[in-house]
Image (cartoon, rainbow, N blue to C red; front, side, top):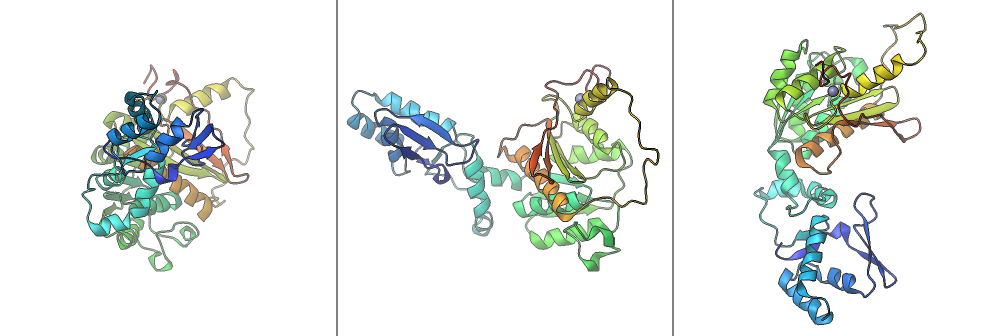
Length: 366
Ligand SMILES: [Zn+2]
């Protein structure tokens, strides 16, 4: 850290003479400090990027002779570790002028959300540009997720779907227009995404995921897998297993009527995606016997899906992918999150604290 500067969105506010809030208003970033003698506020005032650490320490010991310079340096270190301070002498990003202009707003948001110390404001964007992501399933969730990732500057985006565009897709699948009806989804998606970001490498394949082996090849070839397909029924469990084998971080996004969900996983770091369902099956087995309504599944009832729900799931899935690649924000992995569009409340998804003993993928019998 050469010339420490409080990040602008984290700029502190003093309440009265003894209380300082730093980090703005956002929960998860803001912090409250007690400042009985004004030392903290005086230090924060000097952290505007115009001084070196040594000159800040010298100015502080002049105003507060009873507090030694090492205390000042330690306090600056604490602020850096907490993610509130950046270096005003940021190293060059290595990006060209147009690219820096294109992602200037992304950089500002990454800088705002990034709590990791000693990182340049451009590090997250550069990491995205070097990353490769495969999006499996180009329906409502996959279209929105792929669009968000292309706009965000993922270096290589590969789009996989076996289907062609149908009229019933056009209420939510944002990469297709009326003229695309009848065209392979992968082709239409690639065309549209390239028109949004010609600097990214965007590829596609009309591919039927009918066995884990197909998924394994994709998981081995890409940095992150985004699963936005729900057929065949086993596809999430297959993805979980092959990503555990290849060590590939992965995300699933989807919805069940108005319930939107996203899950993100780093294989080997805790419970896997099959652990939660295994625990749920064990819980249901202990309940009174369950009887389904006799008519059961009616395949003539269309899938319930809209642009808002699919878009929410797709954007959350893209957000999770960006977190896995950049660490910004540092979302907790190996768990699932949900949102209920009926109430706009978060849906609690039970997460086992440790791998489930009943899990077919990572339990003792796997
Ligand atoms: Zn498991």
